[in-house]
Amino acid sequence: MQNGNLVVVKKLEITYFNSINQKLIKMMENKIKGMKALMLLAAAAFLVSCGGGGAGGGDPVVDREYSGDGDDLERVKQEMVAPPMVPEHDQVAKGGPKVVEVEFEIQEKKMEIAPGDSIWAMTFNGSVPGPLIVVHEGDFVELTLKNPETNSLEHNIDFHAATGMMGGGDISIVSPGEQVTFRFRAHRAGTFVYHCAPGGMMTPMHVVSGMNGAIMVLPREGLKDEVGNLVEYDKAYYVVEQDYYLPKDEDGKYKNIATANESMIEMEKSIRTLIPSHIVFNGRRNSLTGKNALTAKVGEKVLFISAQANRDTRMHLIGGHADLYWPLGKFHNKPYVDLETWNIPGGSAGAALYKFREPGDYTFVNHNLIEAIAFGAFAVVKVEGEWDDALMKEVSKAGPIQN
Ligand SMILES: [Cu+2]
Image 1: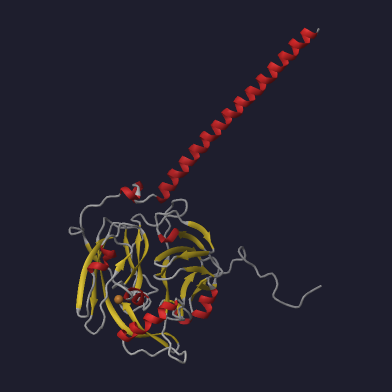
Image 2 (image 1 turned 90 degrees about the vertical axis):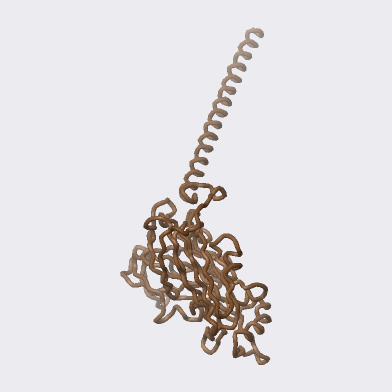
């Protein structure tokens, strides 16, 4: 019996261990299958992310090569318009790459930036920011920069969208009475800052005197949403934050400065505080409010192109969102969705798209609310259309508390 029992026990043990082993083997197989599936999923996700965000038709960014200097390409002239407007352009490129001719005239001028406060501004084409340039990936930008002899300082331009020669800064230095022309290939898609960079302390001083702006390089096939479909905007606005550092006199009042040269001497001290006196949108406080407010209609998709050439900022549309925000303004990155606030690091430009769904006044702010309200970094978007209860409904108006 004992032997028999032993045999039975052994048999049972063996059967038991076999079944355990089989279970283990099954689990291992399932795990491997699962891992294989996960690996396949990850590979698919990687390919999708490349497809949605891969640059230049899937070529790895670091392997891209270029040929031709643009000499034989079709030429078109782009008429510059003052901010917040953007120049006429196609969202999807028609035909092959072109040379897009752009002309900037540098204007040094006294400019009021808040009631009673003025700065000796340095500008491209007379506005702060300078005008937005819009081209397509692969186009060449051919800029003619004119420095009239009525100006008193040397200037140039550094395009963050350009490659080499300090973004063009080294080959675009112009003294009063001179002009210069250079060309660069816009070979990276996205929104990019440009600014004056004459060297040394002159660089930050010219930038915080208003000499900055942005260029938008659209993918030739247009913008893609988060699932890779073409997304077209109904209108675009160009809203740029500017920090100013107005020098003060012994009484703490802003100095009334007579010349651009004097402004540079005074500002060398005030910018070192790192504390702006004014932070505004499009050059001056209330430049985009009241009768100058931005406008849109319910159902319209609006592209907001923003920039800050010097400090970090954070854009926020009170009562709205960004449906799409291309990370750091670069269109071959898959757009983020559903944003409340989007960052613009100093020295960069950003792009966000929003479809307005309710009418009303939306305040577009730098969501450091102190910088928005106390310093002036805000704009207003007036939106017309029908109210939609599906998104918000006023259930009862404010009244006495009911028990
Ligand atoms: Cu300059």
